Amino acid sequence: MTDDLAALRDETLAKVEAAGDLAALDAVRVAALGKNGAVTALMKGLGAVAPEQRKERGAALNALKDAIAAALDARRAALEDAALDARLAAERLDITLPPRPAPEGLIHPISRTIEEIVAIFGAMGFTVAEGPDIEDDWLNFGALNIPAHHPARQDHDTFYMPGRTPEGREKVLRTHTSPVQIRAMLNRPPPIRVIAPGRTYRADHDATHSPMFHQVEGLAIGRDITLAHLKGCIVDFLRAFFGIPDLPVRFRSSYFPFTEPSMEVDIGWNRRTGELGRGGDWLEILGSGMVHPKVLEAGGVDHTEWQGFAFGMGIERVAMLKHGITDLRPFYESDIRWLRATGFRPEDVASLATGLN
Ligand code: DAH
Image (cartoon, rainbow, N blue to C red):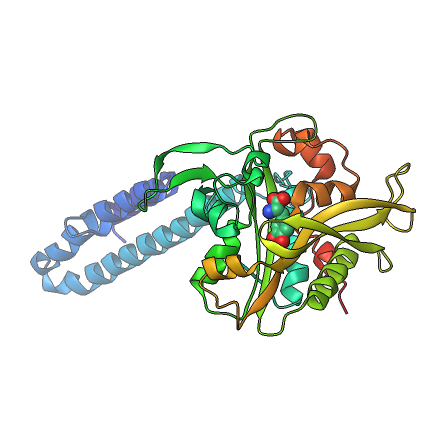
């Protein structure tokens, strides 16, 4: 190799070694081997070399080019390795670190109680029906055989809403879930088996009453539904819900405008300890009865062909009894400490097992 080529080689190889990153290295490559590079220029000049020296000069140029290309490759590999090492070091994962705590939510006891009630009645073939919180006063009262001057209207301290329905009726916050019975009948032909959990509203507020609370309504309509079916369903439900197979259940004659006959249902408990079961005392738990013929008619159901039973129950009340919760107010206070102590883990589905045979 002639001195000029040796000088170019040493100079270029020194630049290759000095290139600190891939971009700098590429600049060295272009300066030497690119279209206008130093080596390329020498190659192009080969034609002007005297024929007897051309072969030797050509071989020397090729050797120079190969040496530079090999140095470029080696340097590129080294730079890429270094870049990868730097990235691996920067992105290193310490898999021995404990995971960061994930925020976890709990299910509110009202929600869980509704889920439990739905699971048990679901196993008996009931589906969930819904109605609006802002109800039409005909569905909340009139259709349920509670006419305008009926004393039951005074019992329900009703919140009236401004405005009227498209039919010109007054709007109320529903005082019970019973209007969903009418909606269910108007929405589908019998036979019917529905339960309707939801919010209800009455204008009283003290330690044991909240202006907003929850009820669940049940309705079963068929050609041959009798009081025996009502008793069977309610007894099975209460024993499954409270998880007490021999829970005493008593049906006590009562009055509701929308059922005839009507019964209040009591369960056994111990008044002193608050424990449910064979404690010798009775605790009222829900209202029920055979659907009044006028209510069937309001729902568009022919009472000469169909009959059925209905019941209504307070959700807070059964939740408090089941879980030993003594104060109603924290249900609505969103106090995270109470929710942590009283809520249910979402993955705990064992309590949704119906316990029905
Ligand atoms: N609607 C009643 C209440 O709010 C509860 C009730 C009683 C519902 C008897 C019924 C029933 O369906 O048959 O107190």
